Image (cartoon, rainbow, N blue to C red):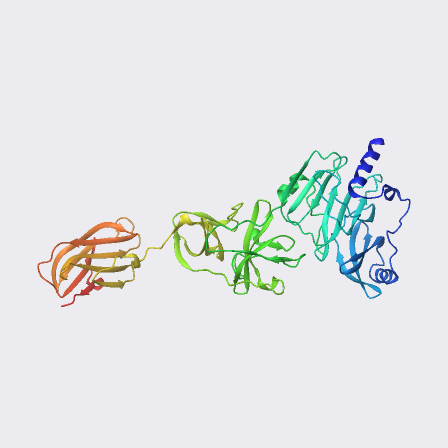
Amino acid sequence: MKQRLSLLLALCLLLGCPPAALAQPERVFSDAPPAEVLDFLSKNYGDYLLEDYIRISDTPKGSYGFALVAKEGARRLLGFHQEGSRMAYWLRNDNAAPQGLGQVYFNRNTPQKVITPGVYYADSLGFSIYRQKPENVEYIDQAVSYHWENGGFKLEQYFDRDFYNVMHMHVSDQGIRYQEALNGESTGFVDGVVQRDIRYANFSALPKTVDALRQQLSKAPDIPPGTLSSQKIKFTGGRKYEVYTAPSPASLRGGGGKALVSTNDWIQVFGQENGYILIQYDISATHMRMGYIDAASLPQGASVPPLNLARQSYTLVNAVPLTDDPLFSQSPLGTLHQGQSVYRLAAMGAWAYVETTLNNLIARGFVPQSALQAPVSLASAPQGAYSDTKVFPAYQAKAVVGTGLQGQVTSVSVYALLPSSPAGADALTGYRLYESNRPSHMLTAQPDYQGLKVYSLLTAFSGQPQVLGLVPVYSLSGEKPEESLVVTLAP
């Protein structure tokens, strides 16, 4: 019993609560609720128990009142703001206070400085909510504190006791400083973001242990160099939006088709397209997601530029996973196969942001830049003084004629974009050169050039023909004049 009383005293010293408050024989309100508050509760929460009421005066925006109401352990925090001579209802949060049966009450915060090494308290104006479980009436089992900061009430401190182990958390916009409440042996700081606004705070969702802090907390990452850049926008809290991999509700959706973003955490915004904005947000400390949400979710007055994307066609040199989390978990949305066509939209460090199809749906995500290969095209063939390009049902070909300083023909080549042919098929073996309708040399196969088949003749021409004809020769069917390339030379 003596040990329990010591624990109780230590908690009261840490949190600034009067020990006598823990042993109240019956419910006594911290402050008397005014008539208009009682009338509001009677009309709207007649089947709820009013557990406590407190008034916080002298904020820059006047006085506020807070009420705790509960029904079978389901607890709501209700807020009131003084307008003239009356307290007007302005807040309902079903998650701001600890939940469950037991004695729950307010305590007015006493402005204080550092009282324990490693845990820092600013001079604050606000209140705490304490909960004692029915079976542990000698202990404060849970506590959460809100204070006035930057124009509103913000989460400042909390703890959730596990028997003798009490890990006290002090919250700021930069992260959470933790300390073992009794002896201060375990202290530290974890970077990350939690929702601090009293309108959207969720006590049950707060990490209560050091391990949970490290697993859950994260902060917006730095974006690697490339063509994507982000801005951090503070969204209206307490909301969730569906997330898609592309700017359309008909596109693939991550998270097994259930991807959602909560506005209670950080959100990076990259730009907007087609009425949607590209964002990155966290799922856990080691898992992020990039995707699109409706642009209507932006807070009023937010300015987001259009996405700066450029569609360039590529193919994949090998099978690769497509991910919506390139900077952290790299969890795959699915696998893209070798040779699959994609559009490269942007670059982000070693990653390419691409659009393709996955599971028959439009999908955008990231693949390694090294997995991309520009598609084979006749546009990559060298230029010559004279040329002719034709597109046939089965392939494309371009004839290129090189000339010397005096305009004489020095080389003739054909670059062909051919489909793969099975063994034994009627394959293209070369081109027969015709000089002004007279058959002459044969153009033979040379090493491939950027994926193109090459057939060339490198020889000096005795005369200066006016027209060069190039007729393909096949292994089985021979010459096919209907697929000829014709180059007219200047006189």
